[in-house]
Image (cartoon, rainbow, N blue to C red; front, top):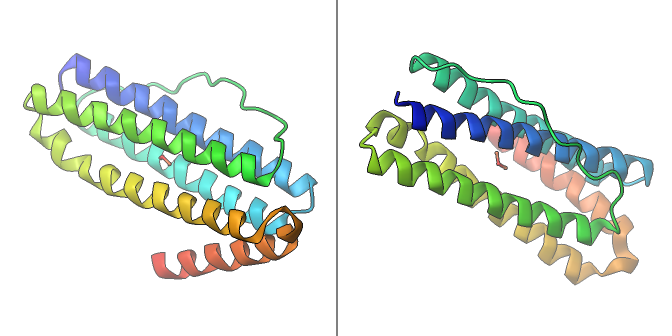
Length: 167
Ligand code: FEO
């Protein structure tokens, strides 16, 4: 794999790792606020992001590169509220999608077809992640701030259903 492609994939290792830590910070915040459904969703999301990071690490190394384990920025500790937190998740996922698109563009320009083929999984995954977070935000807006208890129970069921579907 060409050095510039290895570098952009290593940048993605860092971004997936940061995503995992960000959602872990959100899980911890939600847990301390008694929102166990939200915390459960965030813990599971954090695990998924770690899995994404591992996929990039393995791919880089298998293609003859060297995956670098990065130092990470500290994610925010406090969040204004659950709605604001999920708005932040969507914003972050859009940033990650853009980042994946940049890899697609570079792989295309450099005719790196193995990477181009491999990364399609991430293109689909980002579409799915953005739409599932948007659905959560829609639900939150529908229920309103006075129904957070109900939302917390609902989101617990959502992750359960997703987990079953994935098995
Ligand atoms: Fe791995 Fe949610 O981006």
